[in-house]
Image 1 (cartoon, rainbow, N blue to C red):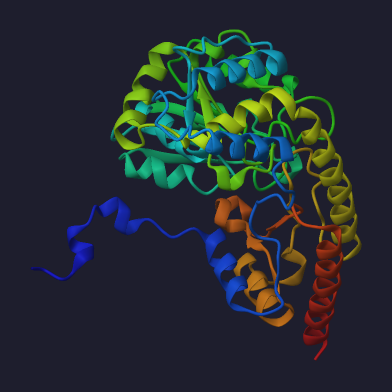
Image 2 (cartoon, helix red, strand yellow):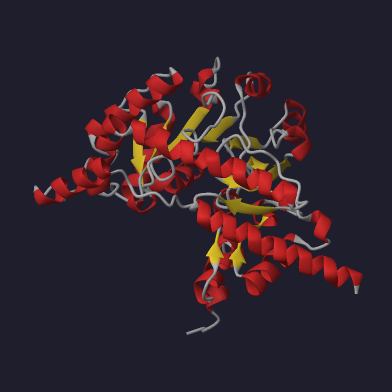
Length: 395
């Protein structure tokens, strides 16, 4: 047999690059004493009521498959949650699907929509999974590079410039990972106006919707004609500190959802049963826990933004998620060089901004889903690193 396995594999899989986020996470794991601020995982424990519900489910032996789309009780809770928070109604029986994390929901949405040759507009900087999934389907990712001068928001002018007769969908990732940018109603209205009268779908990834620090989160599905063309992605990982439970959800018109469900049936069958029962409790009884965690994140957010600005690394003030995105161009280093030198010399792991798209070059992503003590020590070490860089320049 030919042992050149790469020549036998799917070309798109071979050409896919490993996640840059995991690269620096792996380096941090190999070094002693590293403060890792690279992975977006809450440092809070999952609320006790959620854990207790899972324990009770196991004790009662509720470990069978659920319906492919998810427990009906959970789908009803999700429908109620969307209606209460956004004022938009979905049928829990035909328009909601429970997925294995928000990542599977994104994968299902792209695979259901995209055919070879279709163009998908990807707002960057953004979460690392969109482009690889599009390419695996033979689609063509078309980046739309947002700018710090625009608060990393997508503008109608940028959108218009990228639309062609091959455009199938727009991925709208707000609140944004890695920048922490948000889109308000007044920002989304012009976007919706561009899309009206086209056949372009919207995949709106709102996994950080509960972590919005000034005013409530606003979704594009709330605007006229947008629900009918949109796939809403959300989940439990970030808001309820349930990353390891692997549970997300998608909401979309029945005509879209029936195709996503088929893919889910064949590839996954159903999401983890214990996690689904626990998620019912999360939505029903634990919304106050979100508020407590958000208040803590908000304090850390202000501390880091102030800290980086004092260090001379200009830092955009995020309005959502739990990341800051300081600019490191003043150091003269690329994003990769900055992160590699920092982790090896000072044992602080952050993620190069260019991992989130070319427009992220010159920035680094720093997560504040970690304790204040960790953040304080990290800033201290980063200051030492910057001082050493300055001394190098003088020699």
